[in-house]
Length: 439
Image (cartoon, rainbow, N blue to C red; front, side, top):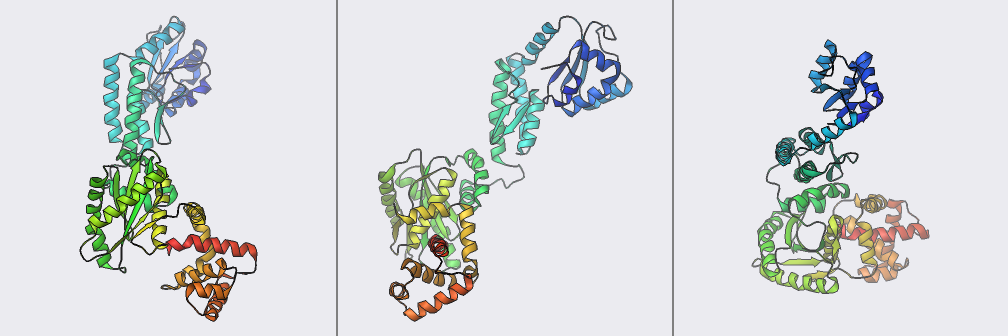
């Protein structure tokens, strides 16, 4: 419900509003601006236009409008009415009528729910459908839906609006109707882990709608077969996947979910609160039990265990930590370093911006074929970690110092880098450490 004193305000009114024109505004509209006013009301998607005042044409029973205005009102679905008497009493009476009783609110809710389902998962279409069905402006606000804050909707209508807004959130989170109907929690979990950071955040509402507790604390176990890339590796992962999640839930409970992410099986344990070191010890114990239960006969598996992180991006950080743990420990069960530079680097490298910066620094090396990128980055890291000493780097790498020196000269040429420059040296040292889990 909106009281209009200036006809120029009509175009700025919220959708589905009933516009009550004051006597002065009504006289102006009927005299020479009714077509324009109706066009503005149609653009604002108003529900009705009510002209007021004692001197309206038609004696208050209904305004006399021109043929073009009548046609415009019919096309746009806007009712045009006239009312005399006390303006304040009219507004109060209309408010009561709009609010309706319980049966009216229930009917509006049912109509709105059907309309929202037909909207196909698009937040814009959902908001428009809910607005039309309820007669109350509803708009998307991020992942939520809410009525126009300028309106005060209480009573039965307010309850109907609240119910439809919550339903609209679920419908939007479920995604467009033309998406594959069989999207499972495992598939969505895989997308959350491998999608770019921005896209992963956009998937979070859908994950909540499917029952994935993405906002809680996550510990990730990463299981990898001890074998080279090839069809056998992926066949083994497929065979282990369902058994791993089922076994994990038998060991601990229903808070485990699993997904195939690239060349590994990721099993996620999610709990409402951070359990600290005690929780990590439990996760390590559970990982050891899980390895024993799901290891196929004659096959070897390794498992990396992360620390706990919260929320959708924390899930990705935990997955990255579990991968890092495997890359930096040769044992069958590897736990992520709880402190030190590795942890800080992993948190930094989890962001897309840092990932891009590292790739830009090392791109000429990463573009090489085969295992050359990992080989050269390992040499550069050891050389920089030992303060530019070829002899000490060679000792760590089990290489001849002359081979280390030759490779360092080649790296400097590829990267166009000056390893005597402290800033370049530090940037490359951090990049080498951060890039190692991805190689």
